Length: 107
Image (cartoon, rainbow, N blue to C red):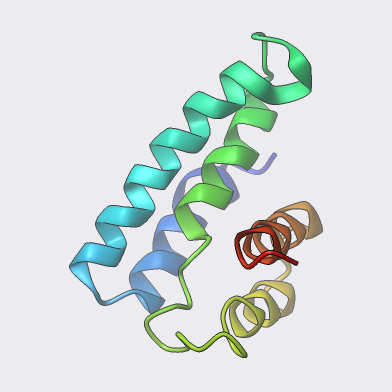
C-alpha cells in the first residue's frame, strides 16, 4: 500500500472536510478502536498484516469525514464516498464505509 495513502492522505482528507473538533476527536478514537479490532478479528487470526491493519485504521479515521458538510441520512456517507471515488481511493475503503453505515441504520 502506498505510504502517502497510509499516512498523509487520510489525515489531509479529515482536515479538509472536518471542522468540528469533537468530530475530529471521534475520528481519532474510532481509528484507534479499528486498529485494535483489526488485530483481534481480522480473518479470525490475532496475526494481521500491516496492510490489513492500515485498511481498518483508515476506515475508522475517515468514516465520518463528510458529516460536517452533509449530516443528513440522504447524504452521509454517500457524498463522501463519491469524493473518495473521484479521488481514486480504494474501493475496499469506500465499500467498508457504506456497509458500516447501512448496518448502523439497520439495513
